[in-house]
Image (cartoon, rainbow, N blue to C red; front, side, top):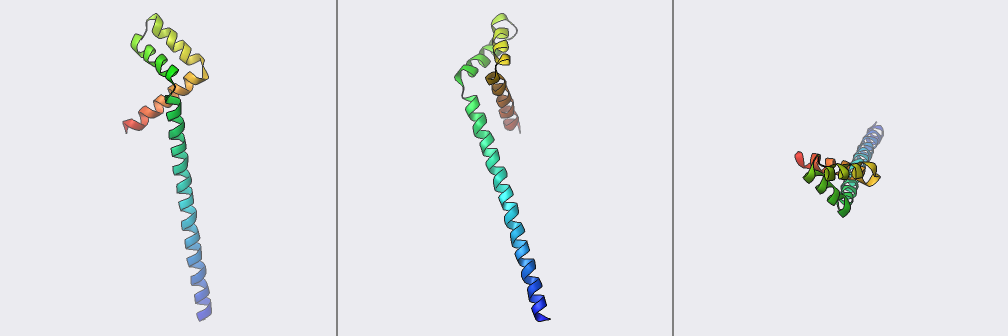
Length: 95
């Protein structure tokens, strides 16, 4: 009887420990993915050409130079990625 109780306690303890290790691995992976996403957004936002276009676009608004900058940003993959990264950065700083 004592052996069965000891065996059950050992199985329960090892299962509990294993489950704790699994959840911490998932948390570490999620943290790593978030830092990777943050680094990729930072790299995209450091593009000087896209910064220049965005500044021109916001400064001149609906005038011809502003609309040309908008078209240039919309038609390139880099421009769309920059805009998405900028929105994510604004969302993260908002709260």
